[in-house]
Image 1 (cartoon, helix red, strand yellow):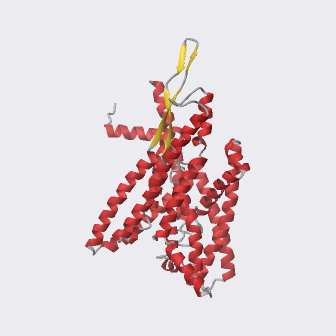
Image 2 (tube, one colour):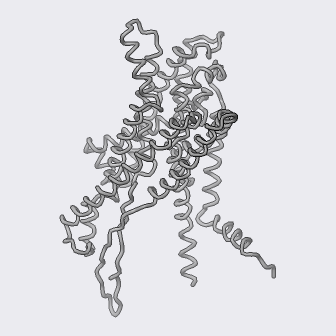
Image 3 (cartoon, one colour):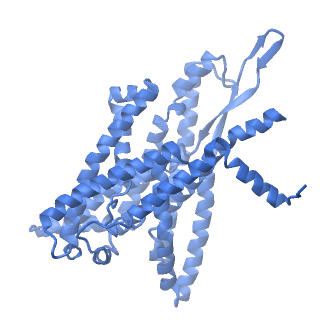
Length: 446
């Protein structure tokens, strides 16, 4: 009989666990969809000289947007808009569920059928937003980078064809994201953004190495920055995983000669219930109007005063500017509270009703309305801590980049770190969830 070392046994166990509940197939499917996405990101629009466009936008707001598309935007690929329209559409639908009773009913009361209808509305809005953003992007090309369009291409044909292709590319990206969510591991939209950020790391590393190569002061600044980045990642993990556990006392029930229940459980209220979504939503909300302003500021406007005002606003709203960071912080805080308010299993009234229904209670608090009020206070406090913690974490690395002078890592600041760490943690949690049947099987055998 062949003997295995502990490391070999762990490897064998890991490989056998991959087959549990189709986990291996889910991981392979996710990787396949990512590969398709990356291949599409390399297919340029017809009539575009991508190298010329990259020179124009190298130090532009588009460069910041390009990070989340993994280079698809700067190379003007057929999926240049990336997952942005889908995320923006999701924001709109979720906001509308708060103000439109019919949509709120679909989300909370009609179960799976209602969620399918909301998903359909999200897809329709995605196409509309993608078409609008396609037009804006093509106008941006014509206004700021006309040299990137090949001279023998008919402008009218280029505009119409590009809008149609970019809209279709955005719809295709949405389809990939939904497939990954349904059949793969993790949230598809977050995974695509994660892959886009990861794909840009070699570029940032090369640029940073060139910047600090012959400057001792910048080398020390880079060391400080990397330490802060590492500390930020640790704090992000703590923020993502931390929760406030509310003790629940369950009643005892006697069935025949056996007694069931009576054990204490708890309800976990996470400090950051929205995960990376408030960050992604904040970027989607903030960058769309700033991009429009940036385009207008570069247009040939006859009125000199309006042109100067637009230029000042565009400069102030650059990702490295104070105004941009202030608005970004407020959006993160607000969206964290908003996201906590729409998560179905975080509704104090519903939790209190269910506890009363099954005879459970919180020690020292009466069932019903007092329980709902107590849970609402706890949720408000935990969300407040999480929202401000997330907002502060989102600003520290970017501010450190400005302080140390390592401008090449500005794009991969806290926003990217939070998304990468958050998506990685979500991926790990999804794997653990898929491995639960194996754990229960082992428990039952014992």
